[in-house]
Amino acid sequence: MPNMSLKKNPMPSQEPEVRNKNFLEVALGYTEEMAVDEAQRCLNCKNMPCVKGCPVNIDIPAFIKEIADKNFEGAYGIIAKSSSLPAVCGRVCPQETQCEGKCVRGIKGEPVGIGRLERFAADYHNANFKGEPEKPASNGKKVAVIGAGPAGLTCAGDLAKKGYDVTVFEALHLAGGVLVYGIPEFRLPKSIVQREIDGLKAIGVHIETNVIIGKTITIDELFEQGFKSVFIGSGAGLPRFMNIPGENLKGVYSANEFLTRVNLMKAYKEGSDTPVKENKKVAVVGGGNVAMDAARCALRLGAEEVYIVYRRGEAELPARAEEIEHAKEEGIIFKTLTNPVEILGDENKFVSGIKCVSMELGEPDESGRRRPVVKEGSEHVIDVDCVVMSIGTSPNPLIRNTTEGLETNKHGCIVVKDDSGLTSREGVYAGGDAVTGAATVILAMGAGKSAAEAIDEYLSK
Image 1: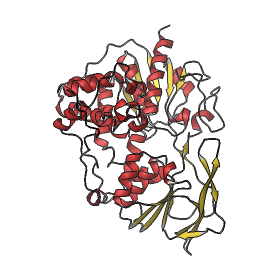
Image 2: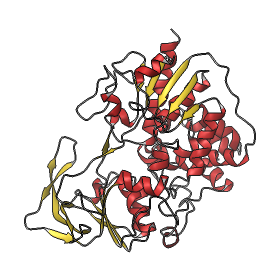
Image 3: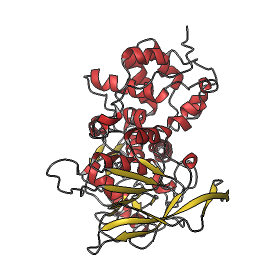
Image 4: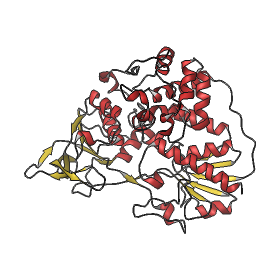
């Protein structure tokens, strides 16, 4: 009999007043009993609307049925056919707007906890599977992948399973991309990312770090070295700023720099090579997931007050509902309908405050969202000693500036011809944030998966 409860099994987690002082994972995961009970809420719909909402087309009802039948390893096997990073996706995908957003159980209650069940299956496999994955037979063809983030790792994994000799070139000293430098430990433990990467290496993926495409080696030189195709999954790591007075003051960070220091360089640990000054009052400008991550990190670094400063209303916050809820529980202060106009400094050029104006929502703009309009006479100052700018990123121009014939748009994103990721250069494919601008992990993975299929078709001619 299906479980007809209107509510999901709640996710066990650290208490807010405990977790906001440590970098341990907030969500603790389902027990076996919880997972089975949640899986029994699935109606196993024939038309499978949840699958239509998954960018990598996981057979969701099938893996959930295996969990309901207590075949946890079988559930993992089904997920792994479609996803190269299941333990990651179960933690950071915006399921509420994708698979769970399509779940029919959500019409009269809460949808099935698909993401929580995916995480459970992946964690069960990682804890209990002791063997080695089977390494596919080589077909002798070499493919280069640029960037070891979600798009690149997915493309590399899917091609390796088809027998290609895949080498991933990563600019940083660790593979993982945004999974290691952007998403905090308390949302995505780095040991889990490393485990997923080790799994790709075990099936034959080669990863070379500290290689900057366009400096260390060019795309043209990769072809000269015998690579038959190239996938560009280099992400969007170039931060944007507001171009307001005071952005060059000491204590102003881009969210990229701030999170990289914390997550990749472990600034929160004693003796870190790249420490972040302990600030008392921090303003994070922006309302997306990255802004929530930066704000929650600042709190854990010892800040007494942390503000989210966002020019639209709370209903327009683009971050996941779960991340907003966690931030509020932990004590983050939300200053919505508020827009910075200047960052103030003291005599030593350190941040001393942020001058803002209040906003109100007017008519919808080209994005369909109501345009924020300044309220007359609403200027005010928020007393802070650190400002983190989290208003978006764009692709680094290095690859496009060193690759002849690679078409890009006005935002610096690589132009692709269709969903295959084919660029204006023959044999060169691209996907993820390098094409779309900053988006989600799972969308980048979907692009990597599509490109792998297209590259296989191209090289099989």
